[in-house]
Amino acid sequence: MSWDWNVVDDFMPRFWDGVLVTLQALAIGTLIAFALGLVWALAQRSTQVWVRWPVVAVTEFIRNTPLLVQLFFLFYVVPNFGPSMSPLTTGIVGLGLHYSTYTAEVYRAGIDGVPAGQWEAATALSLPKGRTWRAVILPQAIRRVVPPLGNYVVAMLKDSPMIATIGAFDMLGEAQAFSNETFTTEALTVVGVAFIVIAYPASLLIRALERRLVR
Amino acid sequence: MMSSEFFTTWFLPGIWITVQVTVYAAALGAAISFGIGLARGSQYWIVRFVAGAYFEIFRGMSALVLMFWMFFALPLFGWQLVPMWAGVSALGLTYGAYGSEVVRGSLAAVTPAQKEAGIALNFTRWQRLRLIELPQAWPEMVPPFNNLLIELLKGTALVSVITVADMTFAGNLLRLGTNETTPIYTLLLALYFVLAFLITRGMRLVERRAKAGIGQGPVKTGGTTRKPGARGESVQAGSQSAGGMG
Image 1 (cartoon, each protein chain N blue to C red):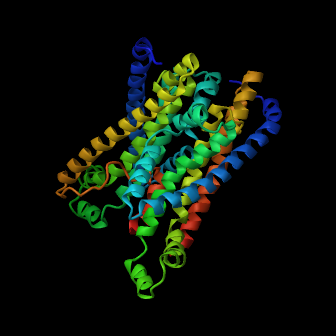
Image 2: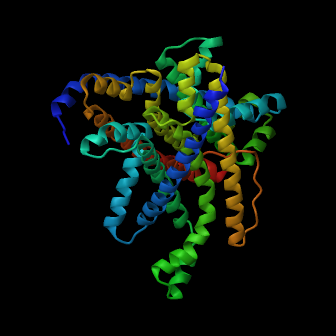
Image 3: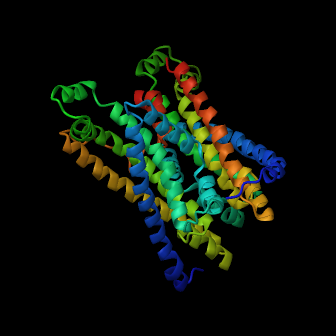
């Protein structure tokens, strides 16, 4: 075997570029997933069949098909009839969309977990529908879904290297490019270790959060 | 358009490769799930520690990066893996780590009285596990295993990037050859969805059998597909906070 620390040193500047891109994708992807997931969750509770049914069908489909193929679809098929996006933008949209179908399920469970008495109290006070959601149901629901949502952020971090396959320069993309130029493999090992170094404290944080928020 | 020749030389074998990778990785993952899951409940701290370290490392690792590493970096350490086996091992090791949490959690959820009864009857540890704890924990494991299995199926698409000729690889070949992207990727997504649906149906059957095996009636299940909470970590979190209360 061969391990050369000089190669690692050479890779470092590009590694930090990659970390930045990965974190950027993760941050924006998370925002999309959290926001869109709530939209899906509320739409799935709609009384209108023609709203509920298509949303359920679409989210089930997205959740049960691979993110990798979805990224290819967004990158190679969507420009045929829609907007053409850069690899990084496509990756962020793909990550956000894919994980929004998971967060939708988390929100749904959280909303179902709000005791029926809370709904009845809101009715008894004759609160309007919007107010019931904003002031009574969602604050209680979101509190209990924070830990599982956090778990999906970690999961998204681990799926984020897939955006390298459509040409984005995240951690894996940078490592691949560097390895191909220099015929070395140290960069890949560095990135592998980096994932554990980022993901492990993150999951510890979520566990701590869970202990605090769930009574 | 897709020629029939292309279809029979690349696409159909690609579907078969996807199924094979799923089955092999699931077998490896199941072995690891039970091995590590049992070891994490061991009475020796060193066994618990090693199993826990395995769980944390592989749960924190990205499957794609692990796969790349096995394919490109491992050969330099003197181990050349066939691409397909690099893919299968990476998937099996990763999803095995998630699965170990499922096994550990369901074994821990068996009522203590059951274990005590086993001790009172002078069963050995192994007998207790085999005759009392596992049969009761197994039905609880099936739904989360179903979720993991579908995550695994979705994960198999990754092997295409290390040159294994699965159906995603065939799709990419066709894109390079013809530039006709819309039909091929739509078909690909539909195929994965169908496979996921078949797995869910199969696992429902397994669950019903398992429940009947310990004298519990079939539970009514809504919808056509699974409820996520997929990866091991969120199974635990979900059941403690949102999912379990709901």
